[in-house]
Amino acid sequence: MIDVPKLRTLLKFEGINLDAFTDDELTILIESKANELSGLLGLDVNPVHRKQHITRFKGDIIRLDFYPVYDFNNIQVNGECLNPNKYRVDYSLGLVYFEEFITGDVDVKYISGLDDDFLNNTISPLIKDMITYTVTYNKWGMGGPVSSIKEGDVSVNYDTSNGLGTRINNTIADIKSRYASARIRWL
Picture 1 (cartoon, rainbow, N blue to C red):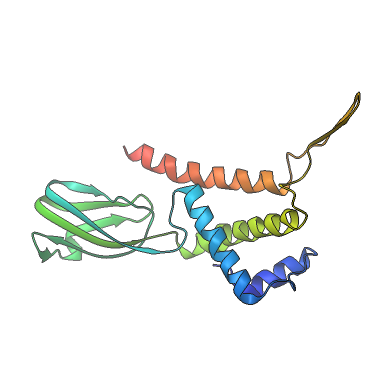
Picture 2 (spheres, helix red, strand yellow):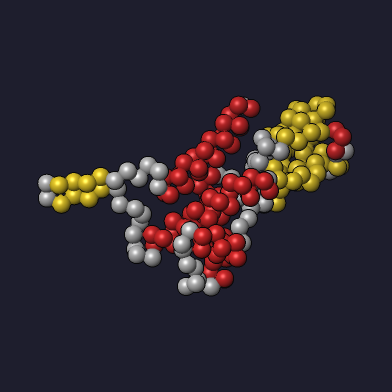
């Protein structure tokens, strides 16, 4: 995830001065944008420890409630740990495939969240862009760039299709469709 010194440097290159903000304020802003992004995506941006209990399970595949899976702890069937050789985990889809048919109460412990490469290459730049948008447009009390102005009979429209707000929304939509379509294909 993006840290405060890196954020300050990246925004300095874009001509945005963050000297008015303390490191603590920027840390809160980064965390806030990460949480906002998690809500918009329906995915855990930061890793979250999960426990899933399934009563009277019968089958050879478990669909985990949260995916993608960042790390996998263990599976217990009827209170006993299952040997990792007896199952395979699809981290991106959140699926557990068993070597044989399983029956009984199942407890699964895992960590949901995005992998480090995706965080560094997609999520961190997106959070930086979200912060750029917030800092740029909120300091004047504006909600974003103006797309049209009308005075009397004269109207002027501006093309905002490649603006920062649009790029942010398109990236969010791309990420959502990537993970939504992955689960739909499995169903």
